[in-house]
Length: 530
Image 1 (tube, rainbow, N blue to C red):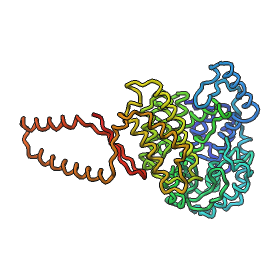
Image 2 (cartoon, rainbow, N blue to C red):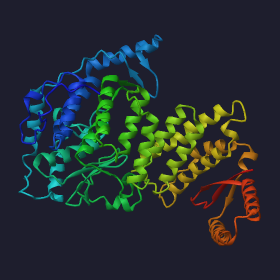
Image 3 (tube, one colour):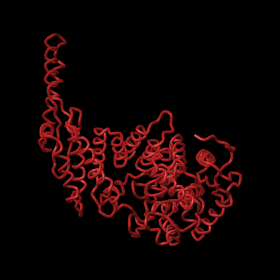
Image 4 (cartoon, rainbow, N blue to C red):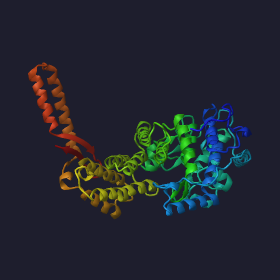
């Protein structure tokens, strides 16, 4: 972590309308980390407007414009020339030789934009003492921001998720609008307004118990205006977009984490800016250390990806971060988040740990089966699962079938069961949906993937109907109770020991690992290995 060089007593807060000039200029990543650290530890609410403007200015300065374009061209030339020292390849190339200088963040720049935001919000009534926000007030803040946007910004593009983009160019993406509304309400003095984030959408919660919800932005390719509405219809529709009402509801520190997790490090379509990646990584570690990521699975996954590319922590690995993201989703959100499992599965796939990858992808499908597919709302997760089904899994199958061996996953019946579990989750997601999912584009790879496993492997998976399973479970429970009663009466002599040994030997001849399948096929898989 960067060394703190400024006075810890200085507060970066500007909610009184005055930004402390002594905090500026910011000339390095260390200065920015220092600013965020004081904002999060000063005992005063971190100012979302100030922090979003600062990191937004840095992001856009390093990833857009002529200097960034020149850096991208230089990196492309280095790769073409075979100079791998200039870039490390992965999903994207991380530009290691970026010549873009770190932008100096001045007090004049930030104070001017901050004042502009205050002026924009001046038409909204400020709260009286101890007064909470109402749906009408939040809608008005949303209207003010919405009506000042350039209409072309309704298409989600890179680098439009921060307040600098809004205040310098009147452009925001859907997340940026939600953030701007929350930051605006904070600036006005409404302390009960909080940001809620799903895996592909954002809205606002408010009220004393923060149970009231309101749409403040759009979603997807269109600009359909649901602003002012409650999100309950989305939850009732079963759409993944709203996570069954189990989205991340942020405290102020988590809202700062959302600002940092939303940083876009992309320089071009296939390359990333190392300076922005390093800034994001250090900011997320700061938030991690302060405990603001414990209830934020997506941010943990983002940090895991950054650590996978360039490890900076001496003891916490990217694999551990992916596990923590899953544990967070299970503990705080009743296992209703899909992306923690796809993060983990794709990580194992990159490491060629295919058994673990298939298990993680199957777990992702177990989550998506909790929802009902909505064509307009679920486009992003649809593309993610389609990529796994039609690109990643077929590539694994092709690789593994090139030479059969005893250790190949094609000789592993548990992998086959997880493959079926993955597809079964997709099937159940499709149930009750007005739009089919498993069209011919899914069906062909599905059949090809399944037939890669030989019959002797496939035959180890035994399919049972749910009613048969319930009867067997009841019978087993009764037998277990009778056995326990019998054992309580038996002495611990040799005869009893022999009886127990016989039972143990019988159990060892048929070990079972159970996997529940609950799509419209309604079958139950029991993996048996003799």
